Structures are given as structure tokens and as C-alpha cells.
Length: 345
Image 1 (tube, rainbow, N blue to C red):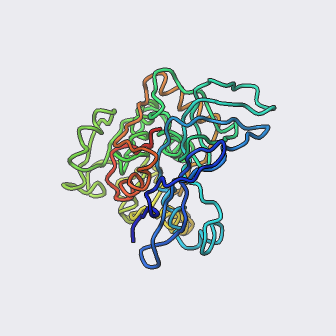
Image 2 (image 1 turned 180 degrees about the horizontal axis):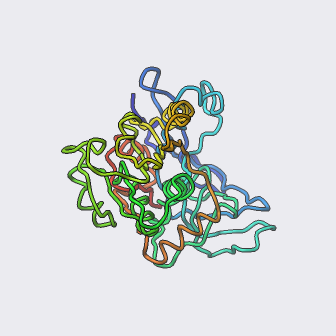
Image 3 (image 1 turned 90 degrees about the horizontal axis):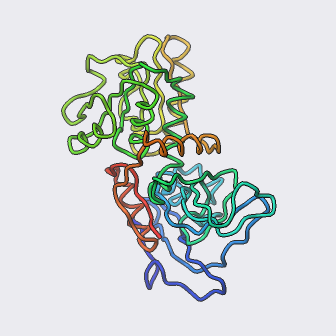
């Protein structure tokens, strides 16, 4: 099963007054039941609510959650998303751009402000977002870099700080250090004063070192669960080792933070991990937690401050246009992106 564009191309648009281009899914499917069709259509420019701002989108980024919503997998998600036809069709969450208009209750943002944050339907020329889900873009950061932050940045920051309870001087291992979450996690852990080990492939080793990793384990040559290292925190973005294997390299009171599964099925990985946590945490001194990041205005501001101070620099692998959204999602789904994949407008 693949991603397909409708006849005439993904941006086969029909004239609409005050129209904008927006990418949506016409059909959801999986490898066994059908084809996912993305279309770039003209729709009415959204009206701004009292607590919202209208953003002229300059960039958006792709996340694994986008293809899960697009495909309607895991299947139990369809209870919420729509059994046969998707209830919500517009794709994208991470966004950066300029404020075009502000609702009557919005006092901290004004037209012309450059912002980044989260909003459903970010793969579009314009999108409305709640002011509380946005932060000012640092001047030293591009729109593309800012758009790459929200989902991956929240996951890395909250996983290390809130679930791992990271402290200066601790030893942290990032499994999947070269991906979207991983590249943020390496830099955030270093900014907290941690000793960081990144796990990645041979081709990504130099990049992971360049963003601050003190040590790199090449998983094509070495299994980190069989190494001599001992860690206070393992932030596991991959989930390709059994949790009993990870215990071997955790300190007695260490914490394993799981944020996904080996196949990218983050929801299935989270539920399976939760079951393991409930069973095993009763009998061991180590802590095993499962985690999915959530939006926070305060954490958005913290990530902005880290970028402004050049302690975190978003890593961008590839750039695509709005009409190439299906190619961007397909590339991310292959699982080899170095950092983030962005849509540029």
C-alpha cells in the first residue's frame, strides 16, 4: 500500500473565494485494505476564533503521528478518527509562521509576530491556532527550524525532565539519537549537564557527536544492552530491545523512558510498555515508564529559550513543498530521517 495523489496531481485545486491550499486525506487505509490518498485542495481561509490567531504558514514539519492519523492505524484509533472515512481530514501539527490576525481575547500576540507551535491542519497556507499553543520564534532560528520543534521537542524535554527526572552529572543514553526526538534529546540532556551517549547508525555517528553526544554507540557494530556502560536514564525512541535487556545497563535506581515501538507504532508500543511497567515495576528498584509528549505553552517557551541561547539547534534532514507532502510523509515513514523533515511554504 502506498500514498497516492488524486488524478491531476496532489494540488488539483478548484477555485474557492478567499481560498488557501491545504493538504487533507481523502481516504485512509493500510497495507492490507487499501490506498491512502492525499489531496491538496483549495478551501476557505479559516476564520479566527476569539482565543485564536490566524497564522500565515511559513513552514510545518512531519511527525510519525501524522501517518498514523492518515492511515488510521493502529485500528482502534478509527473509533475516534472514523471507521471508514476520516472525520478530520486536514493533516499536520507542527507549524511556524507569521500572525495574520488575532482574536478579540488575544492580547500577547499581534499581526506580524513570528511564532511557532501546534495546530491541527498545519499542512496549509493558513491555519488557526489557539494563542496558548504558540510561542514567539527566536530571531536566530529560521521558520523551518522553529516548525520542527513542537512534537519532537516536547517529547524530548518532558521525557528527560518530567519522566526521567534528569539531574546534572547523570549518565543518559538516547536510543535513536539521530531521529527527530533523538536530536533534540541529545542537546537538551547536554544543556542539563548530563553525560550523553547516543545510539545511532554508522552514517549518523559524526552528526550525533556534533550536536553534543559525549559517546556514540554504533548499533550496526554493538548492542548497547551488552555494553559495559551503566546509565541513570535511557530515553528509548526505538523500542527494539526487550525491557529486560535494557535493565542490564540501567543503574539500580535508573529510569527507562519509552516513547515508541520498533515499527513506529507509538500507540501499540505505549500500551505494551504500560503493561510491562505495571507488572515489573512492583518487583525491581528500576523505574520503567511509558510516555507520549503533550503540548505546553510553558515548555514551548523553554524550548524557544534554549534555541535563542544556541543550546539547541534543530536538525533538518529534508525539505519539501506543500505539493510534495506525500513524499515527505513517505520518506519519514521509512525510518531513516536524520533529524526532522519539513514542509516549506
